[in-house]
Length: 560
Image 1: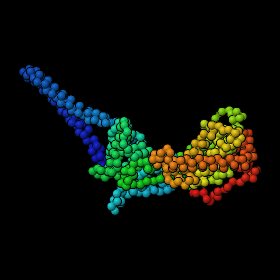
Image 2: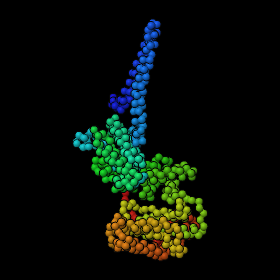
Image 3: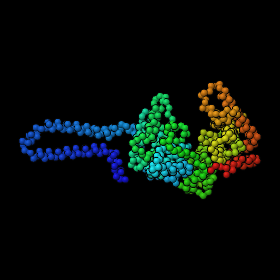
Image 4: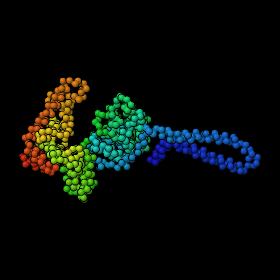
């Protein structure tokens, strides 16, 4: 291995070494000639010295010629070492290389993504068992694409692959290749793969990781001016060529890309076999994965024995691994702030509340504002409790947070991959709960309904225009065909009528629900005005007082 590194060093720096050797040889020769000449001068007679003085003009000419020769050599050397390298440094990509062993993220540290981890372990075997693969006529894996929401561990998984493969790891962001000058990004791609090929020859392989690859790998299009799209297309074209491996020798180079965007946003040439050969979907953690994540992060802190990890996992539907880590970190800060020696369940609940709802603002509300906000939040609570059996109200608050005067913290009872028509209608009705409660109580509404209307309108539009859930029965994704419709198109009129009908029906259902249970509305609003916050048990007690029961989703039906 030492001889291999020495050989690689000479291959990389042989011109520099040659110039240094030539310079040292010429310098030594000149010094020797000077010493010999001085010795001959001292030992020569008077006639000889006169002859030497007569040769001074000739020697001067020779010195000028030699100076010119050395000047040319010196200029060439500095040009090659600095100018030639430095002039193109704008398009060079000399990223810091990390050895696989130095990444120090082992498989045991990869928590909350068991399926993705299993697929990644197969990738490691393909990388490390390259010789066995080639013996049966197979080819090495060229590319691995990690797809999933932010915070689910795509970068973490890529680092674990580098650690387990014991290969050099070069990490870059897709935005580092995007420049306003055409050709710069392509130059950086060439430089990156040149560096990777050198490392692969020296270490037996190399892993290139490009995070947010959609910045450089999005679909190609015509340039509309200023050269921006041309630069992006040129960069992507160079990446495609490098991934094809059209070189004199095949190297064990594996490229890993990560993106939060859907796969359809990437260029199809990048996704074909031979480039990104494998795709791993790193999705939100399930129930068992969330339990492992909470256990993993709490073990790194001083946690109390009263923490029920299984309960935390059930209450954390939809949280990413990064968000779970943030909950534990925030809980530790809250525990220290409150003078506690360890993290307890109340600290974790406070952390979850702070992250979900935001920090409480010190804004003094007038009695009229408090009452209006109380009825608004009560409307959300009523609809959630009585019309959305798949959801729970964890807390209702009229304390200002972020840009709102109050908040209703709604959690999912079960994990859902898709939503049916009933669950979507329940979402819409929850949004309208605050509006209808204000309207019934005060005969007018406030600007607080703006965000609710925006969400409800978006859901209604998608149900009618994209998912064929309107009463007219029109089926198809009409958003795609929108530009083909005229302003007076019969299809547009029918779809708009479907939207208005769905909106009116939802408003009527919410209005009837609140009027039929107005005593409960007044009770909850009154308690909210007094206490400012009501948690799940307090709300449940009020509904129980009036004989209203929730529809319970059995725990065994919760997807794990």
